[in-house]
Amino acid sequence: MIYLTRKAEFSSAHFYRNPAWSEEKNREVFGKCANTNGHGHNYTLEVTVGGEVDPVTGFVVDLKLLKDILEQEVVSVYDHRHLNHEVPEFANVVPTTENIAVAIWRRLDGKIPNAKLQRVRVYEMDDLFADFYGEGLNDGISDTAAPELVA
Image: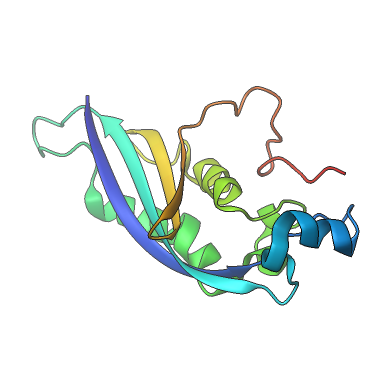
């Protein structure tokens, strides 16, 4: 099996807040990230797929098709959006780097022909990223988005 990674970028705003908590509790847990005006990041997404090399094309996956899928499923949905207000999977989920990685996995899983999704890596900053490998999705985690907020 060969692994292939494609990058994409998007810019989004977000804030961290659990509506079941008081303002004080949100500030205690999330600090300045609890400010409901939000703040933004220039995210970098790396999507790794695996598969066998096609003996005719020499590809694991058509790179143009993979780019188009990332554009349609992720960039066009997340770019220049406020995640809390404009992206449905974050209506009841804190849009942390970890939860963004899970949500992107769910958007992409099963949509890349002739390849298996292996990893979603989301960089919030150069020195902060989350990796998700699809583990635990069938272990009681919500099928609609990342795990929902709880008190």
